[in-house]
Amino acid sequence: MTATPLRLDDAPQAPSSLAEQAYRAVRDQLIMLQIQPGEPIDDVGLATSLGMGRTPLREALKRLEGDRLVVSYPRRGTFATGVDIADLAHVSEIRATLEPLAARRAAERASDAARAELSGLAVGTEALDIAHTDRSEVMRWDLGAHRAIYRATGNPYLEDTLIRYDNLATRIHCVFLDQLSTMDMHIVAEHVALLRAIAAGEADRAGQLALDHVVGFEKAVRAVI
Image (cartoon, rainbow, N blue to C red; front, side, top):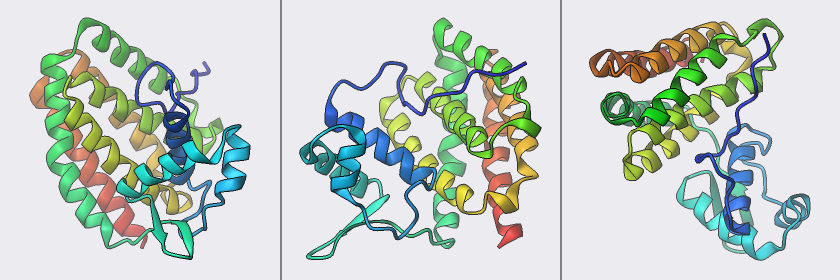
């Protein structure tokens, strides 16, 4: 069975403004390392590839700087931020607190539609043929599952915060993707269990599974560096 690829959109509907479209498109290129850490941002080339002018792209880059995904230097330009493994502990510390909270709140508060979406994601994730699925596509499923959980909390502030830190964690994951190939099956199994726990309203179990997922990720990365 072939699973339908997930989009990286934070919301089910496409963004309406050009600046929002630029923000999401460039952000996802940065997360998935299509724009490499430390690489200069070619705003002219990016604007052309996205089919838009430089103004919405510049607005997007300002937001991305706030997300710690790009950094601007006077007279030098804008660059993708580097990936410092020392950041892993800081990012994991925040995620270890907020990911379990989000999982519990989603289990408690999710609407019927959200629970149906999470159940469907669990089925789709379980159906992934890991051996024949591109590694970047597995990462997209990882992002999609997390973002669906954040939406299900019904707390937009918690959602926005966790998206930011999950993006940073995913960037770190992508840097070590080849060395973490054995994690793919674990990611799938953990997400299936977590999604189903939330959909079933099992708040305590969901919180523990989310914590285990964050802690396990940090340990796996540290084991290969």
